[in-house]
Length: 257
Ligand SMILES: NC(=O)c1ccc[n+]([C@@H]2O[C@H](COP(=O)([O-])OP(=O)(O)OC[C@H]3O[C@@H](n4cnc5c(N)ncnc54)[C@H](O)[C@@H]3O)[C@@H](O)[C@H]2O)c1
Image (cartoon, rainbow, N blue to C red; front, side, top):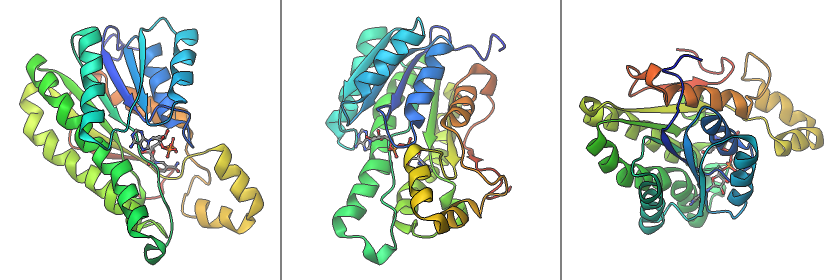
């Protein structure tokens, strides 16, 4: 690891860092902490406390955890304030909170559609909105969103989810341009299907699902949370200063270019 890749002394927030389906937020928070960042982990689920305990056990990072609904303005504002109160700055925001309600479009209810947009898009909008003034003031910032490769490959049953994640991809380019002069980069990491206990159980129960899910991935497997974390940590580092406004797929070749 180069000195530039080190996150020593940086202050990071990772959203959706409870013990979620694929454990992506948890893996990201653990890696940022291992590289030297102080980390605030937050989630609507109280299991985020467990993530904080794991980080304390595994690293020497300072850690805070906050249970909050980030789809609401007040919840997001509180989380950003807590980090700045504690450490006096905010360098890295990872907008990982989300989660799909995956079904054919017409099988959604108005409530599931709203929930999909709340979880995936409003959380990212509000956290970015309250984080950016601090990043601008200190002339440094790294925002990394977790999007979805399904926006690019038009995956089955993903229209509602893609509407939300597509908004995240779109916000990436706009913010990147607006804040480039202040050394603030904004990028999105777009996974294809993430390896998880739930996915493996579902594929065992419904073998036909394996072909449907993995058939579109030339590498023939799901992405590991640790692989996503590694890319996020790179984009959050000083080494990645010239990468901004990008949606970087981590997808085993599911879409190319
Ligand atoms: N699992 C996959 O196959 C897959 C594929 C592509 C993209 N993604 C995205 O990757 C990210 C991580 O996915 P995952 O599978 O690890 O976990 P996940 O889908 O279970 O969700 C991540 C976390 O976000 C939290 N969250 C949801 N709404 C929230 C809110 N309003 N406020 C605060 N926290 C909230 C959840 O409690 C959960 O812990 C998500 O953004 C997800 O949409 C996942």
